[in-house]
Length: 302
Image (tube, rainbow, N blue to C red; front, side, top):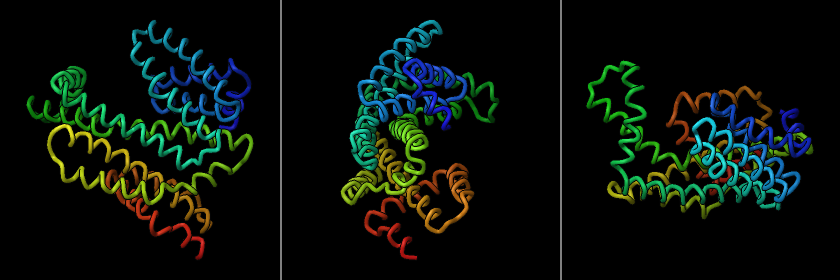
């Protein structure tokens, strides 16, 4: 990872190559898209807003040219608007000494706005959205020869389409945050080894954010119809993710303070996948209540 970070900072051409190259590779392995945005984040953190924005502009030209040749212009625009520019903005805030917790809250605010927009568009254009989902997914599921009738299969696919609307904003916030964290880690590897770990372990969003999250979650449970239901479901996904991050910061603190082996963290992340969504909710609950209980202070006293 240190070698990748050093290559990105070697010069403008290397930064552009990394940004566009990782975006192109993401077409085959999606997670590499995080490295693309992180390259912009790293340049912005180290060399400032102007240099970072220059990389965004030049890389966008190349990305749009490549995507037009491959017939995937929408995908090229998606990278520029939904990944590169937001991560550049978040890295700019972080470079100006805004605390990491507040920067992630800004990402969550962007996600909440996205949740409102997506829910409104979904309710307004539900029939068109359902048609797009069915046209794209129905043939693939039919080829999979699932043991479902035609109507059951359509209902299953439409439910997937609704889940995309409900959790799309949370996924976007996770992508932005992950790229930002990766950029900050790269910066720490080069200039302050261990610095990102210290910063991440201090992640705390505060009582006001916790109360706001509780109100959104309760409202999402109570409201069950119309556009407000969709808005609240999407918003709830964003705030749950927010406190999953705070819960993970607590877990990392436990490992460091108690001098546990790092394998415990690997096990935690593995269980998050295997036991989804139950463990996610548990970690989010720990992160949420930490704003009152301050678990990390208790850990340090042991």
